[in-house]
Image (cartoon, rainbow, N blue to C red):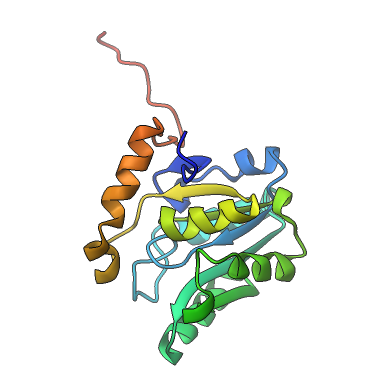
Length: 188
């Protein structure tokens, strides 16, 4: 298996079954923002995300969330991160700047410090292998890759990272983890 292969691959954050993580003791969850929680530049979470996070807390599958986003620079990006922290009821957030952005371990260490967690109880959920998964793997976090909600930033597109990610997933035999298995075919 490729060293950057995520531990779990699912369609979206709203379809992630947090009980899977909780059964493994992963009750502290780092969440990427762009194309995981919301479309890039949007100030509204994707459909089903608030309800999914609330349900995970209510059912006791998650003790704490922390938003972890590469904001690179700019007040607008930080304000957006703070906005999502407020509307999703997530008090912990870390905006990684240019010199310490994901996949550096620093954003994940800071998130764990804020949540009072350690690698064995922490997972990262994000849409990019080369930032979210790679950074989480450096610290031994459980890694969950979700399909991106929308178009990538031009740097991601032109770098060819999505093609490389597809090759990693394919070579590792990763398939989407369905929320519910499909019903049996009534006409086999």
